[in-house]
Amino acid sequence: MYSISEKMFSVLVFLIIVVVFLYYKWAFTYWHRRNIPYLEPSFPFGNLPNLFQRKENIGLTVEKFYNEMKRRKWKHGGVYFLVSPVYCVIDLEYVKNIMNRDFEYFTNRSIYYNEKDDPLSAHLFAIGGQKWRNLRTKLTATFTSGKMKAMFQTLLECETNLLKQIEDCNNPINIKEILSCFTTDVIGSVGFGLECKTFEEKNSPFRIYGKKVFKDSVLRSLKRAFLTSNFPELARKLGILAFPSEITDFFLKVVADTVKYREENNRSRNDFLQLLIDLKNSGTLSLEEIAAQCFLFFLAGFETSSTTMTFALYELAQHQDIQDKVREEIDAVLKKYGGKITYEAIHDMKYMNQVIDETLRKYPAASIITRTCVKDYKIPDQDIVIEKGTSVIIPVLGIHHDEKFYPNPEKFDPERFTEENKAARHHYAHLPFGEGPRICIGMRFGLVQSKVGLTSLLKNYIFKVNKKTIEPLKMQARSLILAAEGEIWLDVYKL
Ligand code: HEM
Ligand SMILES: *[C@@H]1O[C@H](CO)[C@@H](O)[C@H](O)[C@H]1NC(C)=O
Ligand SMILES: *[C@@H]1O[C@H](CO)[C@@H](O)[C@H](O)[C@H]1NC(C)=O
Image 1: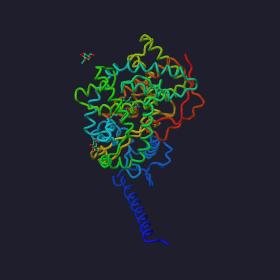
Image 2: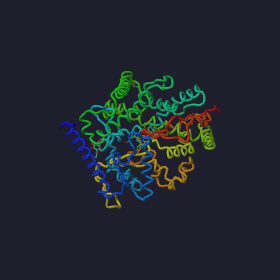
Image 3: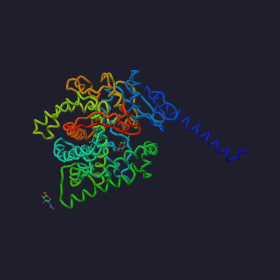
Image 4: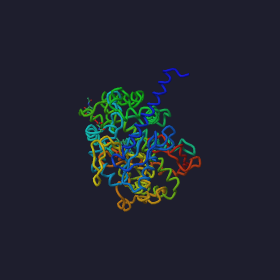
């Protein structure tokens, strides 16, 4: 026998289900109402595969959207992430308009930040509008080629540790782990003024907190994504943090201690942190703002560069002819510069550049790029308006694997990036660092760091794939950055 309250309860549940269902039905008419072609969504995840058993990297999911829209000859199209409409750009001229020509309509990224309760989250990548513009202008000064050149020596000091680490290992080596240590060392050194010592201390707090940030952010994003992405103002009022406070506290303290030490002891050093301290002393940045940028450089710099180097070495290990060709270039160029790895020598390596460009084509660390529309935008040649607040996705992985731009796209072929072949292709067919005013600010640094790592390794060792590596490589489903699932094992032979 049901009691009254049980009956009312089931009626209530039933009503809620009906309301949610009707809401979905209405929300899923969004693209139809805007007259934009769309891929048919389904209840309850929209166009995303089952979120609770994520089996696929978001880049691959979006690549499928790209391929399907391309097959239907669309220049763009709508999809739904749960109930939220997301605008997918396919045509490269549209991509160019959004990233560059009409950038003023797309200045934001809609990443949640909470400056008051969680100062580290208000970094360059997350903020938008005029706020972003002001900070970007200040920080641009820290990434000029003059500054890179001055920092080069500091970066190079981490090379010794990299080689030592390889010396200490037996075959096969876990190359991703070694390169993660290298890039953590580099960013710890130039971003936080620490000595390179990740290798000596296996449990360096930098490695531990670095791993935590990436792990936690995915779990948290599942739990809080709804609130922070749909109601950021409310989330800020509720004091919801973007990162757990233990991570924030750690990075804030490291930066505060180093700044204090340098100021008390009148020390200076050729690194990012010093450039930021100089900005602080001229009254343009606060200590929290410095820490937020250091934290961002750490997040943006270490995983992207280490996966890029890992994929490059993996491909070179599979293609001995290409590996030999890079090594010949390294030897010839270094000879020209007295056997030393210098800033100029690194820039003189043309084939190395092609190898990195091709690596970033096949494995773009950022497999999608996002923007948010900040004022109603009429698409130039059509009678269609993208509404303020709409999320925009640029399907980088899809574009990079489109056989129209790159015949036989799964093949690793640095010849695609000779000057001649590059000039024959649409400029926006290669977007590993994004484009336009919000292009990766650390591009130069990321490239230099990757080239130094590869030069140092290839100069001294031959690499071959060990059969412990599970091939073909699968991409991690839950990682925001495109990275291989499982380890990549290489055999190393000293030259
Ligand atoms: C191979 C290495 C790297 C890759 C593939 C990479 C890729 C990217 C991409 C695709 C974006 C988004 C661009 C856009 O929206 O148009 C970006 C933004 C950014 N990257 Fe990198 N990055 C790398 C290394 C670095 C390094 C070493 C740093 C810092 C030291 C860095 C700092 C940043 C920052 C601060 C932004 C945000 C810029 C803004 O919103 O104004 N990146 N990166
Ligand atoms: C863009 O970003 C700025 C600063 O982060 C914010 O104040 C503004 O509301 C954002 N605009 C939209 C449409 O999201
Ligand atoms: C700090 O060092 C600089 C040069 O390194 C010197 O010119 C300056 O006088 C020093 N200031 C103090 C307070 O010691």
